[in-house]
Figure 1 (cartoon, rainbow, N blue to C red):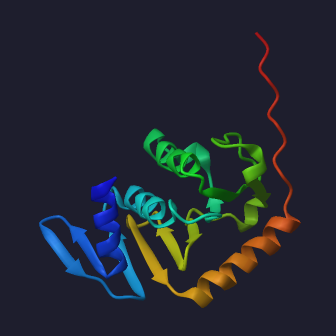
Figure 2: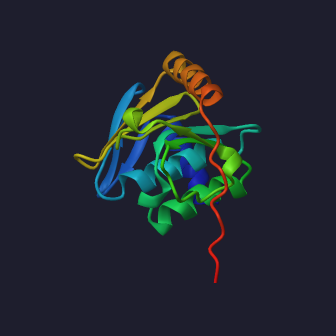
Figure 3: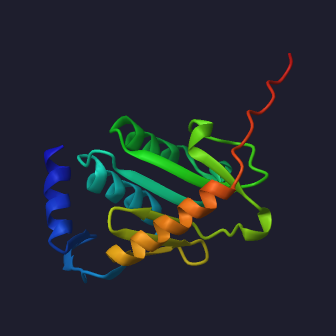
Length: 167
């Protein structure tokens, strides 16, 4: 709790803790790299939004079938903190880790393996190709992406409950 608050306070001021120390980060664009980059992003989202009433995370091109347990646990932590989440997932998805009301399905032809996450005043773009995430802090960009997300959300079908398997 307290350590997380301290780290978040430094992050808000533009200081990022990295292996071996800390570095000043630009206010607008930064890159997270490494095998744990996505988990660090999920933690940043939690630290940023956990005390903001009505906070919401929007995720585009989600595929829960690709998420290891630690990713699911990190997102569950958002839910436990009252952070809302909505996901645009591929149309043929068969695994949904959270309530179906949080998902809409997008056609396969529009799905990519690069996930985009919008939260607070930021947009994060994940690239599977090189284990990196670009995080952009820009109020106008985040607002535009929220509006595009909402347009897609309103036009996309909700997933149907999967049939229960018979024994």
